[in-house]
Image 1 (cartoon, one colour):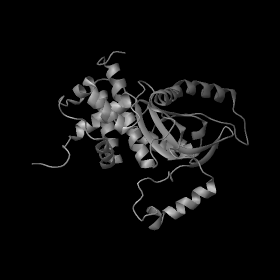
Image 2: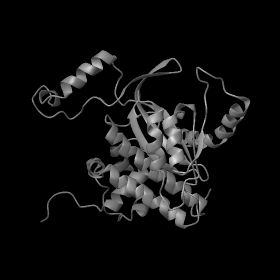
Image 3: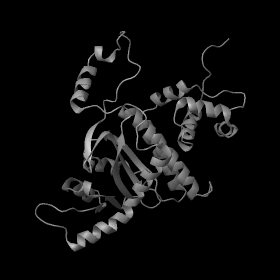
Image 4: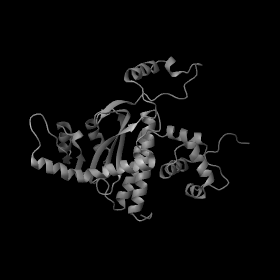
Length: 301
């Protein structure tokens, strides 16, 4: 007789991840339970009624096996399919960032540095019994201040299509990293089709010569807001320009709001940036698949 767990196809496991995002399922054990209990879930997964759901540990192992590059290619393939169906994907791009709370309890900055130093040793990776730690504190998060309020966690950087609202690229960094340095990455990873990006939008946090020069070199129109500097205040024309740009940037805030409401997008699920990024990329795929299907009339509005 064969021993071990029943093998499940990567496609089936990927569809399980989509169900988790679409139905706001908070944990893998809950996902396993709902797949076993809901006929609609088994129908979507094409899983026979007498077959049990994959074990919750299988979901965790599946995430670990998928690489960042693979998820980038998967998300890009979906956007290319929507483009082939006549939907504009990346004609205009809006870039923004938001703070995300750490999955771990906040600790003082000096204590955090001590833990990072200790963890970077062979003994630091073991528990008190000398076994590999099953749980490790979030060492990728750090402290920053926004609107005079301290924040401990990470930062999500996203670019969104200004025509249809597709999420084109996502990235994560420690919270203290400045938004501006992630602008070029966001724009580059928004190029999914042969259709050139005509204009890239960003708030005042992306102001600066490097980003403007990047756009100029790539023949992309500059939609970055301007801000006052030491030598000169904004002109009336620049103020009006900023107002016009804000009308395009709202679409990123819309994505942030939806993911906050339905996927707890303001708080990290895991304790490493890489795991959280993979979770974020599953959200990107689920979000885009639902949006594109509605635009094409496959799903009801």
